[in-house]
Length: 353
Image (cartoon, rainbow, N blue to C red; front, top):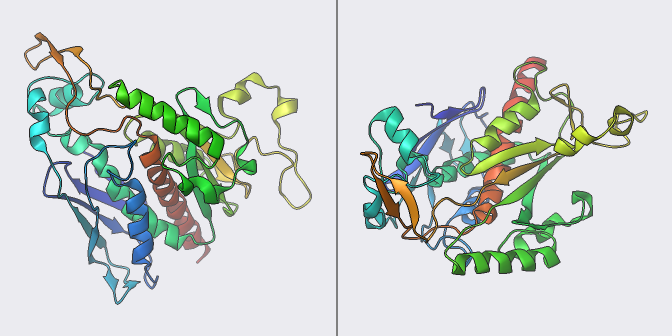
């Protein structure tokens, strides 16, 4: 099982949703950086369950404990080890699916691949794993203080922000529980999620992420293209079904004369349909992309399925689940973006020495 992400800056994680703890080891982090622990906890608080009425009501403090790699508030260059204790598991909520495969979950594929599975919340496949990514991403953000990374909810179901990101005030993203910087759209999204939850159903949506002040030259021209690594990171997030950067699929409808970004004399471009990346390498313009999340697979309705013997049966979700995962996924998208950019930034810095 592959449990590591990154090259120079590498994160290896461990733990299960209903185990004692989750955690990770971060290798390759430079020495001498002063760590802002409050900033790390702030990012975890943005992702943690139970923070509003439109997310899962599991109550986890998600307090991170660092075990190594930090001394007197500064990174030492050694491996940074950390743990997050699980304190609010209700494993009995999953007794009904001990031998039953939940539709659109990893139950069936995991069982067939490994011959064993932890039915309590999905075990290793649970989205609780993303808390580890947020810890590492929060550290990466502090390493990349010169780069601004802002993600936000850009749609829920068929409700979309009808403004370009340049017209949005990112400081308003945290002003509402759906993490949408457009207040009018946010109210509609919240009402939609509440309606869906009341019906015992779930709904999907999209997150847009913008990285600004990214230096020119991050990324490789062949197999480690910057957009490819960002796409890999985003598609590693539970429930993600799509990734597009720059003009994305809309670019497929355009002609070259419309799509080409014309250079200014200073190397910037008059438009940015390339999404800040050309030839797999950052060009100094804003990097922006959109990530599509499917509806959460656990719904509070009867569904037809099969058990481990291949017999037809029914199942209904129980316990505490997100009616829409998008609001809690915003800090996860930012964290993985920071990890990818920090990895390439360290590689670029190493080449210059």
